[in-house]
Amino acid sequence: MKNLVQQPQPFDLVGDPVQIAGAGSGFEATLDWRVHDGHDERTGFVTVGGGTGEHGQFQIAAAIGDAAFQLDRLFVEIFETSARDGAEINKVIVPVIYGPRIVANYVGYRLHVVEAGDTLSKIARDAYGDAGLYQRIARANPQLISDPDLIVVGQELKVPIGA
Image (cartoon, rainbow, N blue to C red):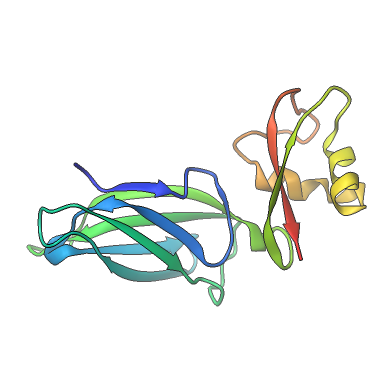
């Protein structure tokens, strides 16, 4: 069995700390983790299983609040460090969206199922009291929204919410 990340899932909207969970095995029962945007990163490790070759569950609350991330999209990585040459092996990479870059004091999101007549501006007005903040919703859903003028009935959009 390879390393497995069960949380977060691809394109999940995450906050700080980033909750990372799954199952894996690492050299001397250690897996490394990294959260980055290509400009800054936070790293650490977690113990899994009883030793090399044994799999166990892991859960990490990866505190990243002091990182100087420049992008909404982050990458969560879990990997082993090779005892042979220090290479990163059995790596799993999960792209996520970082809510605090989109909404100040990010606390979570609401799900909105697009209905006939909805626009991002209307959804933003209902959520934030300002139709001009529709870009927040577009940024939180890049895998669904490539053009803010084109949303589809039935789409389930994440609407990021701040305190």
